[in-house]
Amino acid sequence: MNAYEHKIQLNLAETCVDPFTLREFFALVEEEDFFKKLKEKKLTYGFIEGSPNLRKGIANLYNNAKTQNVLVTRGAIDANFLVFYSIVEPGDTVISIFPSYQQLYSVPKSFGAKVKLLKLREEDQWLPDVEELTRLVDDKTKLIVLNNPHNPTGSLIETSLLRKICKITEDAGAFLLCDESYRGLYVKPKDSVPSALDLSKKAVVTGSLSKAFSLTGLRLGWIAANEEIVDDCMLHRDYTTISGNMITDAIASLALKHVARIYRRNLKIIRTNHRILSQWIDGEPLIEWVPPRAGSTAFLRYNLHTPSVDLSRRLIKEQGVFVVPGSCFEMEKFLRIGYGCKTRTMKNGLSRFKNFLHHSTTAH
Ligand SMILES: Cc1ncc(COP(=O)(O)O)c(C=O)c1O
Image (cartoon, rainbow, N blue to C red; front, side, top):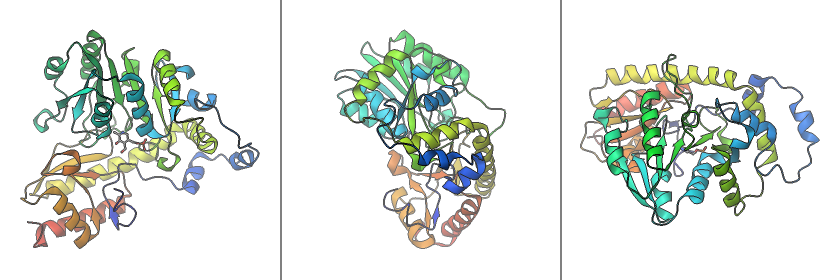
């Protein structure tokens, strides 16, 4: 991402739903006095754990959370790291789904845990197998790690399966870290799954304004959990963070007042783009997928012999289109496409991708 995302013509690698410009965001939320008030803000240290307003706004995203159950962080990446840093000790077992956002299995390993991978399979619709999970649990299991909705596949763990995983976690005396960065981005309007936080006292969830809220540049995420865990994370966080960014905190608080408007905008984007991608795949014999049910990413299997990183590089060079090679997820013969981008980017990117697959001498 680092090498290409800022130079590329058509970015289909992005996971965030089309990030707002500040102008677009303020037009959507219609809060005219905001900048007048912001100018009077004294730029001292902000609230250490996030302002009460912001924490309350985040707590409202859950059924049973209060302000004290929320700790604000610099994105979900910081939130996940802090959870691992606070909970995992050398010798613990951590069970993490695979493939997934690499942080979710590499960081616990770096803290000395034995990490067991719970492999998701295409034939299971990329959903965790509970029997396999039960087999992986041992008496040192401290943490089970999920990402729901799932990057890169877009699979969605529904309520009944999520309840089963919560029960396995509780029986093991472990915690469940559920990275819910893509929460709320359902392709079908009838789909809706509760946060793991509302299903188990052992759940620690992380969230973000980067993906479903399109405010990536604010770098704002959070941990939501029982108070004991939040206090423990606060204690560990004191080594790296004094307080959050006051300006970010103020804009984020505003976003959380207007959750419904933001979701309305973003669901329209992902549902339109999902339809376009779906039609494209129907007409594309070299590509197969398990259609994503939630989130903003799809994991495409391609029927060519070319390694995924070569395919991605050639697609960039010959067509100016950027997709993530499956090798980044240690999965060959796959490509990840993000469908949260602007619809015209999606259409142009797919049309050039089709050209590449059918006319390029190097694709094969
Ligand atoms: C599953 C998952 N967790 C966390 C992150 C980090 O997001 P943030 O921008 O909130 O730090 C990402 C970003 O791609 C992600 O896909």
